Length: 120
Image (tube, rainbow, N blue to C red; front, side):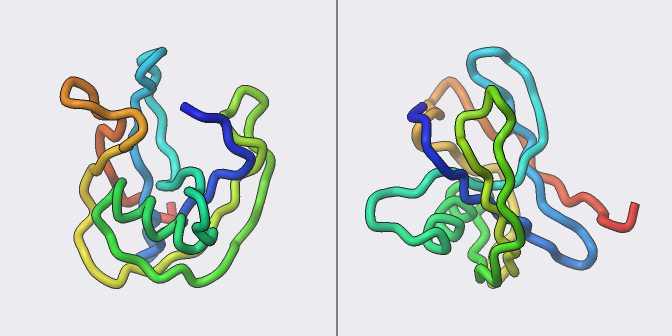
């Protein structure tokens, strides 16, 4: 996968819960939970990127409300920065989607989606 400067990701909050993706790394087999998101395509705004990534990865249509924060990625990460946007669901029910750049008929990166209670 191509290295990019910024990963645009979504904090989708609904009824005191935040949506995360359970990912399995194709190369290492490691699994972890992350915000939905990814890199911008040509001529795409950050907000358009977040909306597209949410649709691909979760099936949700969202409104991008505001930029919450930007932090440096981990040293071995694919990005230099992680920009996290607060999003509100407009329509859809969250389900595991696809990573078009990585997934194929034999392999799916997104193993599950889940809502995590922010109060606990």
